[in-house]
Image 1 (cartoon, rainbow, N blue to C red):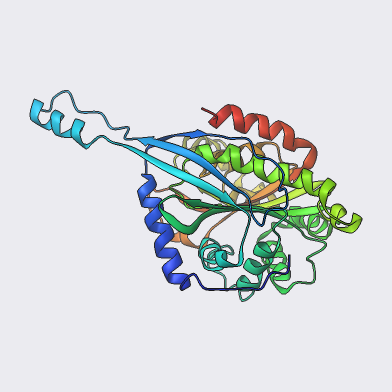
Image 2 (cartoon, rainbow, N blue to C red):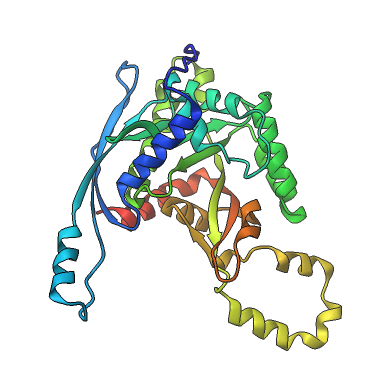
Length: 340
């Protein structure tokens, strides 16, 4: 904690370009295998590093109607790519890479406190993991949890809280306010490049919750140990909405209720305009599982959703509250879903 904030890894733009190149090397649309080693508590070292070997195979298959020459070329195009995912404790040198990952954390809204937010994440080395690949030294993912009560006076946390309250529907605002002011509420920050394989979900969530458990026992003072005694996790994440899901049901409902349209309560009309949670498409498996186990949630359209047309997936943002008692069940489901 309190390390000097060295920023010697180049510019933010270079970090973003390096991270994007690393994601391209991982291979979009390919299956992946992750070998998960055990992770032990930090024994006094400055940072922990874990290697996660991922082998990705092209999933394409040749068309039976293609001639043998095209089939042979397709076979030659198939290749196996080995990518090592390294897990590290946050360091000051990660500033630009982490900032690039969180650049749109508040969607398209200006976030003056972003740099302070990144510094806060990096300074907490007890709990938090930065992901890099063997192809790049720039961060391609991160996961951590910040105690909202302990950080409540930071400008960046105030900005995040105000933004979420602005986006929150009226019927959930009290619940969100209580979560934001809770003494044992953690803000879970979980970001990674879209091309990272889903198999990272299990080792990343394992690392996070194991580190939280260790911190409640190993921190040097009772005050520091209490800081990580979380009873709930507020999660603010990304997903997509499939405009085709529920289309038939929606049309039927409109037809059957045509004569009662004028009698529909105002609240119900507003609620109907919100994104349908049954149509959500998650980019990370852990978000889907934790969302299923959440105490409450709300969804709103991202600014970029207005640029999507027709049947394209519409980007949305999801906010949900996960009770800490649900975490063990969530971890089991994640492991069963993505473990190989």
